[in-house]
Image (cartoon, rainbow, N blue to C red; front, side, top):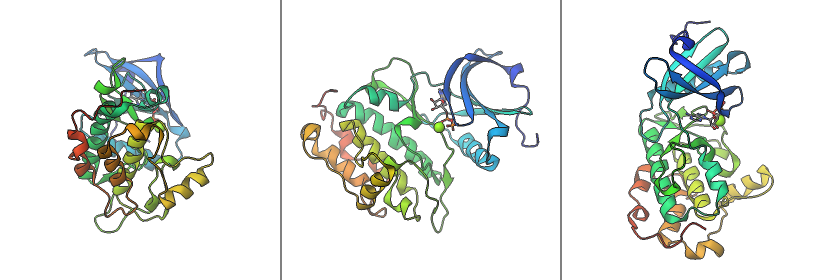
Length: 284
Ligand code: ADP
Ligand code: MG
């Protein structure tokens, strides 16, 4: 059906460069594309409609992403459709996933982590200000905008609103979704709000500073046991050189009580971000 008000004839507007593949999704491929009229270079996610199990979920993702207008969230400029595909025309990120950059190094150091986390919290605070919980925050879902920038100068962009959902004004979200390393305990208990995203942000910060997740095991079920207990450590090893203020922010994000947990907005104002020369620990 072609009744969703999406634009037609993407080939007329954009030259899709199938050879310039940027990534793969479950039922999609993301390639570089050039606007024939303006020369603007974009990323286009081509989704094969026949492979989409829940079209409603994809439409939800499109509707939410289309409304987002923030420097740390990938812009969704337009949606095209033909009989077999949906095409999401997005802002292009050329630096790859934050995940891959973090995997290359042991620790970002506090300066690099500050630069990145300021942007993570800014994107999260923006979503929460609009009543949206992302529900899948992790370094795979932050793309680096420019190629070859040092991580302490980089611009991060949040992608993938596939699991994002509006938090009801009264009541809460209930579906158990997300990724084991990053999931908040109250999500496992199936009653949560946007505070769950702040927990995930705290996990990302922890990983940036020490190179490993706070709740870590070989099996997902064992990871989740640790999450439920809120059992993690910031002792020994690299933690000896990490500032008390940074550890304070991690603790505030990983508060087991979502009511007492710091908000994304307050995290942005946390004193760690003002700690100009926190910067003892250089990247290892
Ligand atoms: P899916 O929802 O099907 O998993 P994603 O939206 O996660 O698809 O995109 C798949 C991959 O394509 C991402 O992991 C990323 O590497 C790449 N990608 C997605 N959006 C962009 C973009 N705007 N710029 C560059 N690469 C992108
Ligand atoms: Mg994805």
